[in-house]
Image (cartoon, rainbow, N blue to C red; front, side):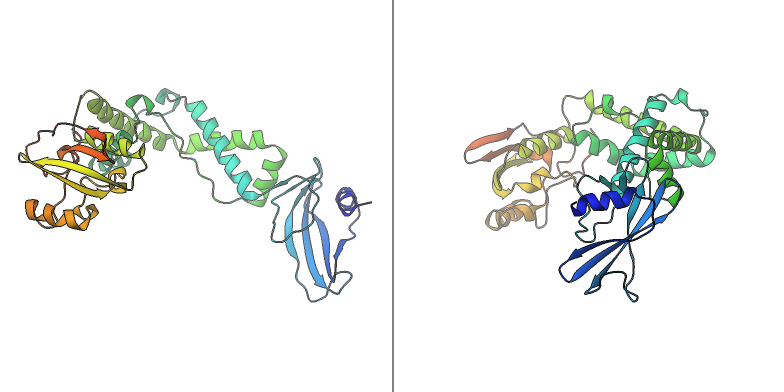
Length: 325
């Protein structure tokens, strides 16, 4: 009988005798401690030149053995434990991720992107203040990020914000025994406790959707230029490109780092991304530490091939910050 077969036989057995694996001068002693009638907690001890348990060596937690399906959960792979491959192992992180994904899916299915499935329809004064804060400090950024990421107003739907931090022993065992029931309970509890937060998300989504619809109604704009430049550059692997800008009727072509054009975190492009020789001429023409803007870019080329081409976008001030329109 192989060690794997012996280990499986020991797991299924009713006795409390330790299981010992020998590997050269090292011995690995496994113990199982009943937690409930269905679960054993597994521990092990590593000892040197000792055939069994050593008096002064500590025990290490290995995992949870489910007697009902002959499976080890919460498996701790600190070492190569020589646990047989046919004993399935599920880590806590894997179970946590699976739980989160399943609860999010269940909640979103129950809400069905419809606020009428909530038991409330009006925000409290505190929640209304949060909505006003969102409008003042975060709304424009949200619209901007989603538009630049090619999201449309039709993509805006309720997204569950369920999170899971840490297992309690009882919850973990309950999930192992009946994951579907545990997921259902978690989803129902989340919806019950977070009614107002979910409604607040609907209100925020309405504002984001309206902002995206305004942008979608326009044929052109600063954000449209920024988005087009970004995605044209993402389709190209160039490290440097030639860029032509037009400001106050004056055109200037320079070489710059292509990666700066792929980023969307800033309203403008810094002149520090221009190669030093061309940067000196840029500063002579437009000023030291001056930036340039997507609406000023008329051409981008790489190795003589045109990547992007547009007429300059007329704005009241060519160097103004990026706006939604």
